[in-house]
Image 1 (cartoon, rainbow, N blue to C red):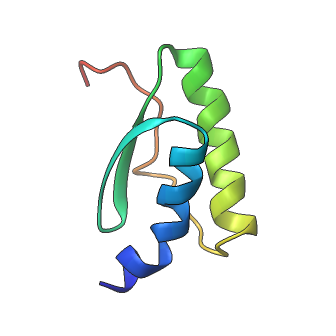
Image 2 (image 1 turned 180 degrees about the vertical axis):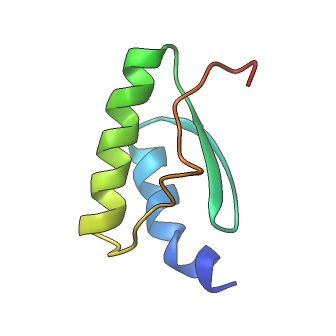
Amino acid sequence: MLANILLDDLDKELEKRSHHFVRYADDFIIMVKGLSAGNRVMASIRKFLEQKLRVKGNEKKSKVAPVEE
């Protein structure tokens, strides 16, 4: 429940940027058109999480991947 409260600001940020995403508690998927866009969004969201929300993502679980994965 605490993750949902904290990450509500992330949801609002992703909606503001018009990203398609799915989030369940502290896991989320952001869908973009290509790998280069995925890398840009990953860097941008990582910065948002660390600077605005003061949380650090799990580097082992975080990746940019094609939908098939």
